[in-house]
Each structure stands twice: as C-alpha cells, then as structure tokens.
Length: 135
Image (tube, rainbow, N blue to C red; front, side, top):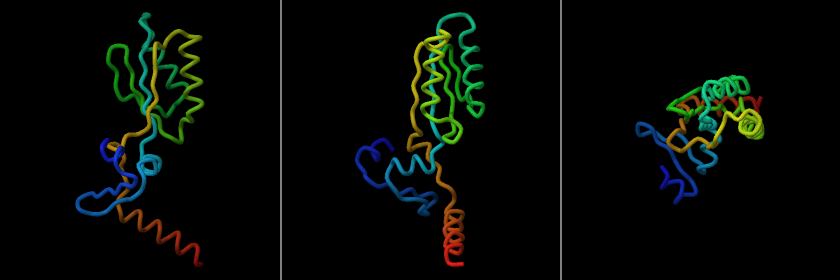
C-alpha cells in the first residue's frame, strides 16, 4: 500500500471483488481510518512505564494499549477522542515536567489499516440522505 500512496492520486478499494470506496489516500485515511497511533518510549527510571500508561489513560480515556515491549508502549487513539494539540501538550508535559518520557511519535492510520464499511451500508446511507433532501 505504500507504493499506492506514493504513486497514485486516487485509490479504489475492492473487497471480495466488490468496489468499496474511491478517493485520495488522505481522504480514505480520514474517512475510514482508525485514528492515530501513539508510540512512546518510557524513561529508564523504575516504574516510569506504568506511570506513563496511567498518564496516557488519564488524559485520553478512550486510548487503547496495543503493544507493550520493555519500555516501549503503543496506543491507538480514536480521532474523535483525541485532538492532536492535546496529544502534543500531554506528551510534552510528560517529557518535561514528569520525566517519564524519553521520546514519542504520533502517526496517522496507514492505508493497510483503512477499513471501509460494507458497500450495502454506504449505499443505504446515501439513499437515506437523498430521500431526506427530496422530502
């Protein structure tokens, strides 16, 4: 999918031989993506990883811990549950004031993680919105 993102201006997604959606890579990520991935590297101090987990879940209750390896934590943040300025503010606070955080990165959903809804639901929503306009 990385090649598609680099070479194509518009992408179409087919599932089981059925056309599901069409749009630019950014449009598909924004519309059907799962939000943001927050990757953290905790400080070497004792208990920093656990304290960092608690700080992230306190700041973003909907954050889902996806992976935990040694001092690295990976959270999934839903787009409606976390605004980017708030994420940066909390991470900089954890890094500067609390000393819990060595490094962090925030990435958008990749094209591999894009999951369009079933075509039937998409057509039904268009049909219903079209009916509402004409009524």
